[in-house]
Length: 275
Ligand SMILES: [Zn+2]
Image (cartoon, rainbow, N blue to C red; front, side, top):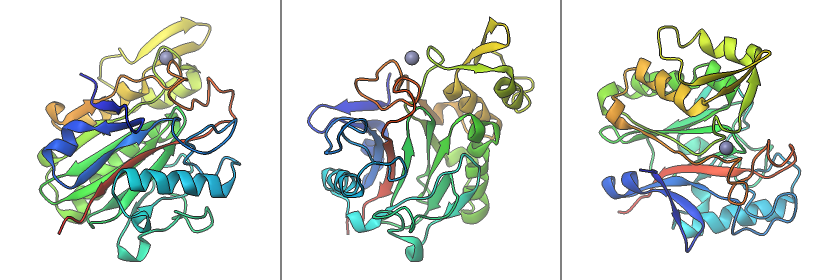
């Protein structure tokens, strides 16, 4: 069953199972619908780094915060560089990057916090969003995994960051692998496949279909699933979306389907302070 459920009234995808099981948790993924940006960013562009009007993006972000009943002051995001660096977010970092790119946390594709009222946000147009929680220690993390971040095992880095910093037990950690480009639409060359293969020695090769002449179709969500299994996450604690951002270009921005110049969806994860 698809874990990222489209909410018709808001056009947001909600990670319903987590939000129901863990009161106060806000978790999900935006679509391209419901914002104020104009083409080629129409309309719910949440990314400040793609050339859209800054005021429109901030308005989209504010609208999202109000739909989530989450104070915009807590929206915190980073400058994403297709790496594997994880940044810890505490009260000093709260709110960074919400109004301007210059203010965003530097060069990070993963964010982790144990604080309430911080909404971790990261941005996507085909790459894979990874959402991670330890409900026992009340730690949350979010990671941006394109093929480079996937090959650089940002999935395993964020698990390690959480266990080392907060003493989390791997058997307590839950993971959700969000909407991204599917293997149906994602053709790559052997340079990409080689860098991922070395991380998956001994695993099944069902993430990979050869098209001949050095071309392959790959399933990045499944690759990240295997990497989380290797990291000691229980299979029953891993949710995986089946949405393809390229097939459903009506619903999502897609770098490939839109020819490069397009908006970004936001993955969001935060503990609301309900006291
Ligand atoms: Zn597709």
